[in-house]
Image 1 (cartoon, rainbow, N blue to C red):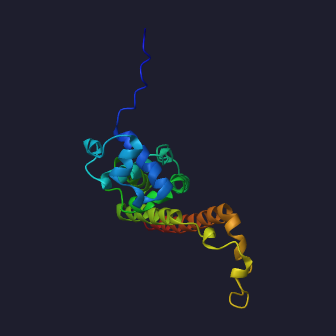
Image 2: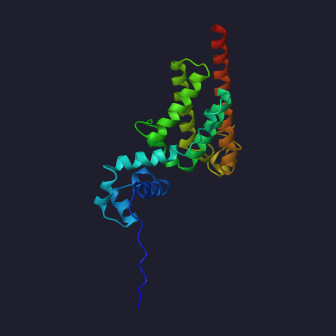
Image 3: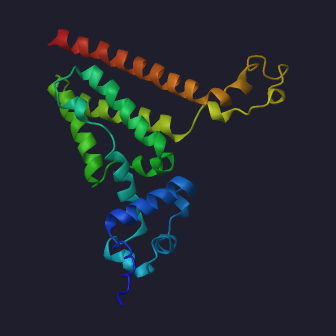
Length: 216
């Protein structure tokens, strides 16, 4: 009589560890990640994780890089105008971070040795210098774009106000009579604020770019 083979547990791999750690970060934040928690979630012993990662920080770095790998960089490959490319890239980057806001503090440290993060930095810098920006200014553009995008992903402005009219007594806050409505309009407010800021930033860069062209 033939016995049915037991289903095999997926072999432990870097990808499985990163996927599990990413899910834990999304659900509970960075502080929830430990080798014990990950090992339990994966059904393995704690020491087996060290065959793939030396430390918990290495795991979190890999989670951060998996988010960076989802950022679209194709707009920098087709010879598109630099401003349009930056605009579309910024929206792709923000969308990736919006899905995983708890990993933003790790991304904020910079790319370090993370391959996907370095590809992002390389693509932006290469596109700016190819468009005629001096290398030093191209570096600053990459930095300011990262500050702006990461800052927008840290928290929601609209969710910072409570859905309670009585919290905003007009005697104390005469200009916040509609503040209690912000929370229910969070997406509209936050996305609108991002686009407003991005447009202002790119408008300013365009003025600098024109001045550079005239000077040269």
